Length: 504
Image (cartoon, rainbow, N blue to C red; front, side):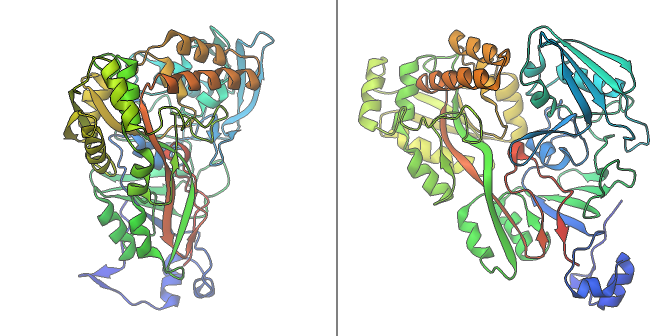
């Protein structure tokens, strides 16, 4: 379904408020008063187009932004404040030994195709994530599942091999998909408040409010995501009224364009997006902890953050952001100290430095960061060759094949320290102590026990300089002044649409 704009040959049409109101089905008084239009189509600008429409098929963070809790729902939702709340789960009980979890589903839920939600759909959806060919980053988190039973249409029984205190949280990553949907890389069949009406690759993705939605009706009529490859073009789209809001501003320098508060609103929230320099810890010289620590000490993270984000953003000394329960301030570990870096490099057997290739995604701020890293490391005799690659190339070369020496990347997920407990993850970090602590944390009887173990694991990972963590992005959303109700934190790159209001 196409959403037409009121323009002819580049000239905006001038329609009376009464005619516009009749066309939209709302009263002229509501429009003149600047009230929210429940039928409004949100025009959203983003840099993150999905690679495909299936979050188990390497779709990238763009699919989370457009589809999480909009098109697809899960048994649980990771809310914008970081709490976990039930969505399609009406009830949850756990056996005394912690190995059997019984979930009761909400009544009256339908997929966009019209099929009713059943326990079989939930079983199918979980099995998609843990299947051998799944590319879901949460596949390992659900590995404790031994079997899934569906004694009736509204009951799902999950039996675990070992306790999993994070099971409800991990299930928030599992889209509930109609078991009859088949291949969803180019289509969808979810239970969310919006249905997909079109996807023009490289251009737009369109959603429309679903009339058969089981829950409260959204406060708008749908959304069109327009995708840009450059931040400047994205910002210009808002300035020229081509979009109503942009989901993530990439540079503080751009904010001055939106300083007029009568025209624009700037919202700054907390993100979980970390920019890091990941070594391939499997290969020399990055298999040497002294080399990793030396390089970390040679890069001035504070200067880098200021160069990219100015006064915004947060320095982090590990992979754990302050919104995770096991956060501790580790910015003092391997803090900036070029003299110490050079000495450590000599101790590691590289008194004259060495050379390596840095594979760098081609979108902001990675190319800028790469040049900064290159200049910093040159001061201690390390030569960096920058290799710019696309997001698709990064996924295949780095994530799948592990064919790299070092790379830049941003990780958007909440509570993702668990990736350092997986030696098969793309960066190849392998510390049995850390792997053990992360495993023990998951079978903890209490959240306090989980937090204690993951806090210890976090400290060890930082001391090992498993990667070099630069900073936490600020979450900057800029909208037209008449748009409100959007999420400000964007955890996991989600962008919930249902409460966004747009004035007529």
